[in-house]
Length: 113
Image 1 (cartoon, helix red, strand yellow):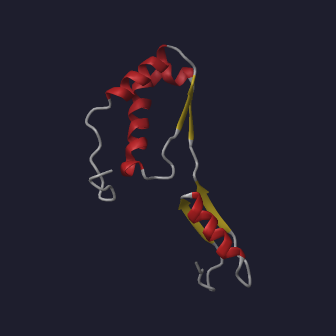
Image 2 (spheres, rainbow, N blue to C red):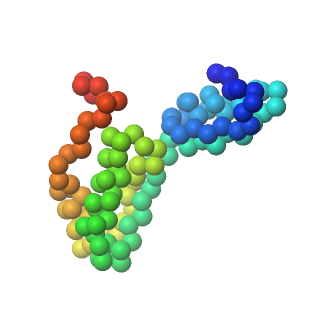
């Protein structure tokens, strides 16, 4: 991998492997440049009891939309949920599980996936 000598910085979202390859290429230049990389994040979501008590269904709808955005291929998709057991969390889980129509397959997905 080579980076155009005119470039003074690089950014990459995606896999750890591609990010590390870009970091290595940037470091090997005669004049190294910074690389800003998002690599393999799990993007935790913290669901607070007061928020769930007030609007569990709305939070669930937003969560499902975020999770399925771009067929789940965005590096900012939520990956872990932290929450306190209770009625608000129960409502969130029920609403998120109901979810409505499943998302449509995106062009990057193979039929056999």
